[in-house]
Image (tube, helix red, strand yellow):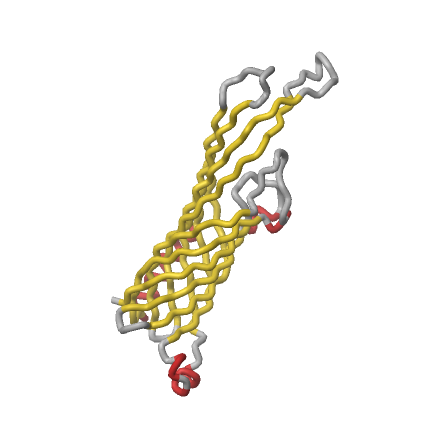
Length: 230
């Protein structure tokens, strides 16, 4: 997380000398949470982190006079699943027979992402000058860095009538960094109003090497929104 803070401070110093326009707005759209190291796989009991999500985000961006833009954002999405979790309750010292009891499990994970993106304007000035439809469109591609907080709450109830036990609840928190690329298209409706889309793919490199209980190692999203230029 300290690296993200360093990047933000350095970026703000650059913006202070090069800033041209400032805008802010909100976006919403569809995301897909997936573990690319085991696509389609499920944990014991059927739990899977491969899920579609409803992404909601607030953003602020600065575009400089050197065709470079910097955008900061906060994104929220939620994961939820239900599955049956088997637990071995046998005592191998007493009997070699494996005894299982089963838990009806429901999990909810709220994810908050704070990210910053450095983008380059790929819009062709020649095409804008000669095609009226493209005159108000700008096209950016960028590199993203994000600090992510995820809180997972799991509620379990035992379904075995012969094994009476109280319900269980687990509350876990995760903090990790994500890196990725983004593609942003902005259409300037008026001097102060724009509509925009952002396509983004973020990965968590540290989670590709081993099994993990964190929400996933990859999040792909496409969001659409409205921005106001100050």
